[in-house]
Length: 479
View 1: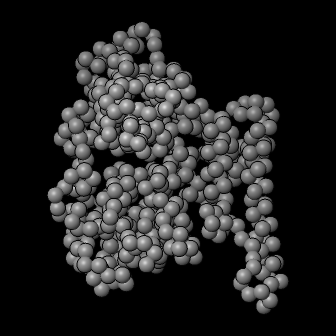
View 2: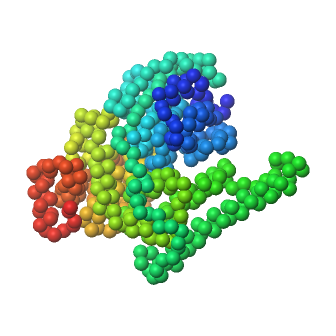
View 3: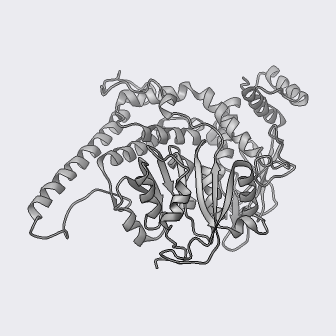
């Protein structure tokens, strides 16, 4: 039925997964939604909304009809952190052919404080561990628990004798309130703003706002027309004819339409009017969470100006967050495996080494001649955010260092060969790891000095000397 990995969650198994959780008022994500068994159970237990991902087109049609739910992707492994930065929980029954990959991806992109509950094939928890299974095993040891549920699908709607495991994880950290992040943003619906260039051209800001308002008005007109058409056709043509506004092929309600439109509008604003080095991956997450947590956000010229002012005025704090999150993540991969993931001697556990390693950041080319290095998306966020932070600290133009220097016209990176990207040189390997090395020791010292200040740590003496030397020379900005 539908596909080989489709095994609907039995009610008693759903109860085992959800009974310990308080779902009231929570935003939940179901990454392998199937025909919606877990989705409906979460909503029945008080979830305010359930986001869904599902690959099978026939199942997506079924899911689209579930109230208070929303499809966000047809490929869970391509969902990014900024799309789900506002969620509270992830509840999943992934395909057992790739369950460890699905759970690890959930961990990778989940916001701080998020709870993750997932079924899996118990053999990946209780067998010979290597690769992704080893990473998952260590992750569970550090941040959660697992249990053997037995052959609980043996009498299910679609039975299987597979021994099923249950994994529970809690992402460390505290969820930030996006409303506090942009405190003072709301200035009312008045669009009047002093004409002139200012932060952005007045004519351009007015055009963006007018496009947003026009789209909202057209949506309302379409809904009214649909109601009138339904009245005319009632008792005449049945349900075959009608009008509707859709998002990714599914009907979309007014509130969701406006939220998605605002996200697109803010993305356009930042692309056009913010320096690239200000637009970190964390800012995208903050904006998504901010829009999702509001019941109404006036997209006006005043608010447009105000948002840009707030982002520009908090750049120091955003640089700190970019440095802290990048180094925290990269130094998890230490030889001690203190965060329960694959680690290397090269990566230090208390500061960023001059050389460090990033996993799962490249893949073989289709013809196995070389590797494709991921320079955008979740796997590259830490590197690009770190480059943006160093640009801010040194005064460099991000556009000059944003992309790796291509090795040739074919764009293929050869395994084990050095290339340059921003403030680093790097080489990629067929197994997916990319090795980075700072090109300049003073910039390396500067980044660690910033990290030490953020963490309240004492900088090692050799790096402190390099940092003082950089400051005495008058180059760059060191706080």
